[in-house]
Image 1: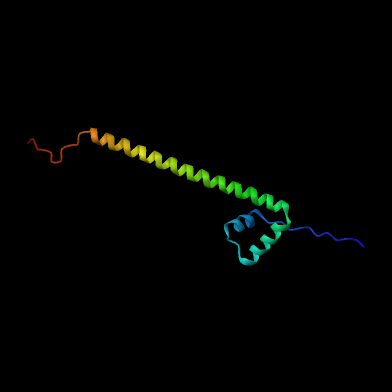
Image 2: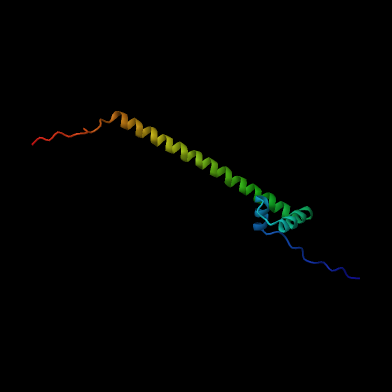
Length: 96
């Protein structure tokens, strides 16, 4: 008797990412969940994808803070400049 080994279908990166985000339809989500229980390779890829997503999110948060800091510094410089720069006269007097 010969055993027939069928090729195992793995989760795509898109499926794993959608599963992490809770964006899969219920049937697909159940399939991914059950596949992850038996497949070390897909679990390792899922962990890698999750780590990459976390790194991107951390980078975006840091970048946003840097942008906010840069905007705050620019505003402070502008306000200091405005404080020490004499304002032009509001109603220029005609010399005619």
